[in-house]
Amino acid sequence: MKKSNKKDRNRLIRLKGRGKDCAFCKAKNVPAWRDYEKLREFLSPRCRILSAQTTGVCMKHQRKLSQVIKEARELALLPYTASEE
Image 1: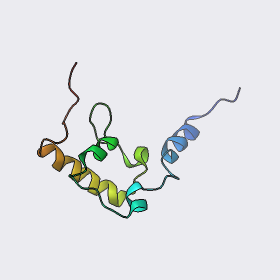
Image 2: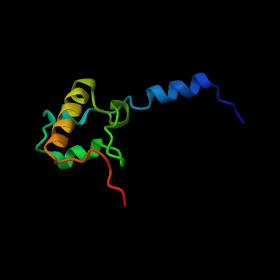
Image 3: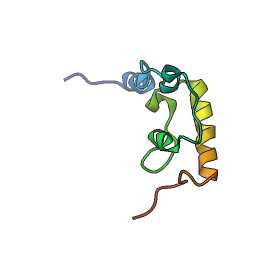
């Protein structure tokens, strides 16, 4: 059994999101608060914004995405936190 060292594990974590194509670049559109159903894909179950590595979105669209999600939260289209049940 091969023992993985810390350096290899960190490398795998860093490279985890690479190789995915940006969904917004593919569709040639930008995120908008009007598509709040689609924005839910970029939130965790606890309603936190997922990182670009996790979602596979390019940094240009990740910055716009976070602005749009915050705007949708202000308009009460998306929750700030998950409801406690």
